[in-house]
Image 1 (cartoon, helix red, strand yellow):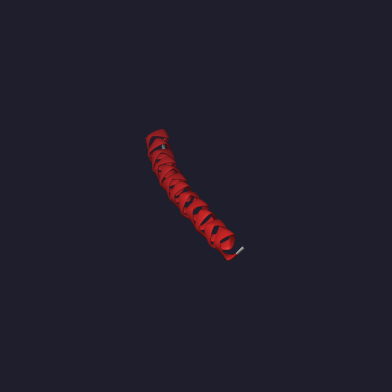
Image 2 (spheres, one colour):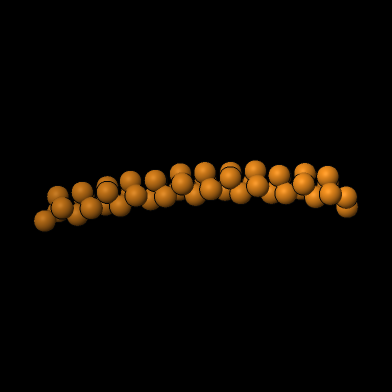
Length: 46
């Protein structure tokens, strides 16, 4: 593999890592919202 191919592979890996980070951020936001909803339900039961 020449250096241009290595750079291309690294760019592709970086793009995948950015996409994974975005996915993780969305999952985190969804989980935080779920926690808020569950806390609200718990408070209403008391």
